View 1: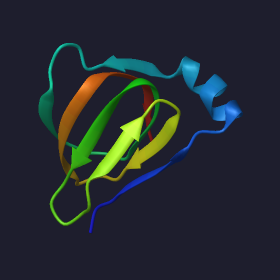
View 2: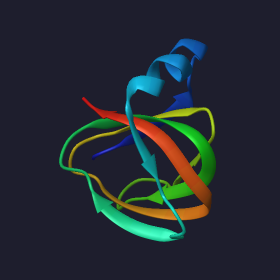
View 3: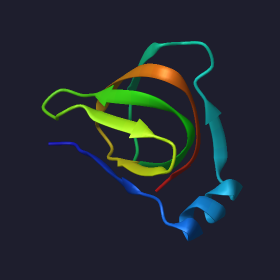
Length: 89
């Protein structure tokens, strides 16, 4: 099973991730994405729920450190525009 893991980002991670690439959801409220490599990100602001087959939904919000493993098919349901800093692993 391909997984999503979430935890609270440490202060060091919140500071260090500012050098990572920036992603913004914009005005969309839903989008699908197939992850072809492992990625980690720290949510800067916003709220969403990531749905994927075989996994429970994962709610994310500001301050969360999220890791998504290669092979996951994700459907993002965005309730407040999301901004995150990400890097591929």
